[in-house]
Each structure stands twice: as structure tokens, then as C-alpha cells.
Image (cartoon, rainbow, N blue to C red; front, side, top):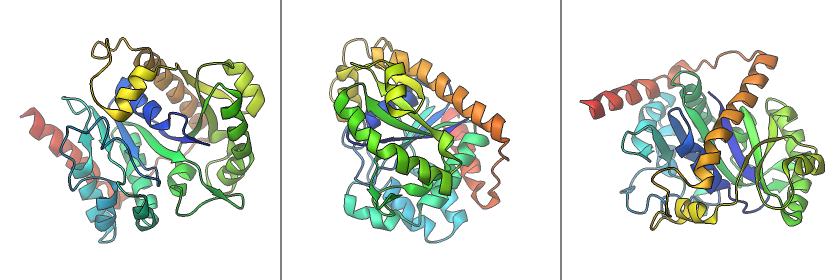
Length: 290
């Protein structure tokens, strides 16, 4: 299964889109909220769920101990988004000043996410937030660069408006250069379109980047996913436009990642020191089913 990083030039619905994809996936799925500017899921969709002492920042302490301790700790910091525990989220930072402490944690987290995708067959989505570029490079502290470099796909989330396209256009060249120099190649880059205004083929032509998936403009569902509160009408039955289309989008994203993997014949990731994460997840599943 793919590891997909969602990024944006400005606030374009990255968190709502990442949550929708995670919730709509047909497979077990995980959202890693890795925006260095701080996470919003904890105060939004998880506002009624106890999250004290769990999340990305707390994992940094385990990572400083050893890779094995880090891998064992990861499952304890995943919060269920559904009763069955098939959709999980790693809550992000509560304070942007914590970002500096995560710079050495990103590579270890990337290894774990790829193990979950390859060996546990998770659909993994990374909310990487707004891109911070400095002198043509991804900022080492204000972006989760290692996660972006190593993702199977990097989706630049844009709205179909002239303003959104204008902001996104300036990021294409540096992001492609960074993926070529430090990642799996510029062809990892695609667009996730939030519809409204320009159509997919027009956006693809304007940015010279393929639109790999599109989601509808659904402010009611997006607002609930990011801010919590009362679910909009029809949400529980998955009749919202956003969740309905997100199901198809997950399949399109997986197909695009699979095409890249076949073309490049990537080797299976092998990080034996991180294998403990699978043992912990298996044990947790057995306990919950007991």
C-alpha cells in the first residue's frame, strides 16, 4: 500500500482531505499529522477523545532512546478514528515551537510508516501541511522534509481557483528539484484537486503536473473533520460528497503509486530494528478482539 504525503502552498484543505482519505479507505489506514506548524485534529475531530500524553512530540523522546524503543512506542500513540480501530491517526504537535525537536525523528518515523504500508498493508497518509521553502530547498525545521522525500507520492493540494494555482505554481520547480535530488524522483509529484472553478485537465495544464485525484468542495463535512462539533446531516451514512468521492480517490492514488513502483521496481523496505511496531499492533488487535 502507498505512503502518500499531502502538502500545499497555503491552506487548501490538506488536513480535511487527509482525514477524508483515511476515513474512506477500503483498507486499514493511518493518518500521520506531521505539519510542523502544529496539528489541528486533536482539537477538532478528536476533541472528545482523551489524547493527553500521546502524539508525535512524545515519540521524539522514545526515538532518542533507540530505534527499537521507538518502534515499540509507535502503536501506543495511534488513536482510533472508528470503533473497530481500522482507521487511526497519529496526532500532531500542539505547539509549533516543538518542530525543532522533531528534525531527527522524521527519518525514523518514515521507516515505520513504510513498514506499516508494506508489511501491514496500511494506506498511509501524511499531513505535511504548508510547504516552507528556503533558497529553493525544503526548510529543515519548518517542513517534515524526510517524510516528503521518501513518500511514494507527494500530492500538492490545490483548489481550482486562480489564486490557489498562482501560489502553487511557484512551488512546482523547487519541489521537483528536491524530489529529484533527495527523493524518489520528480514523477512522485501529483496534484490533489479540490474542485471548484477550473477543471482537472485545466489545472494539470496550468501547473504541468498530473491531477491524480479530485475531491469536491464540501465545507460542511470538511468543517466537521477539522473542527469537530456536530456531524453534518448524512455523515454517518457516508452520504457526504467528500467521503463518497474520497473512496474513489484512495483507489486512484493507490493505482498511481503502484504504477510508479512497477516502473521503478523498488525493493521491499527492510528495517529489522523497526519490526517491533508490527508485533505491537498485532497484540493490540488481539486484545481488542478478545
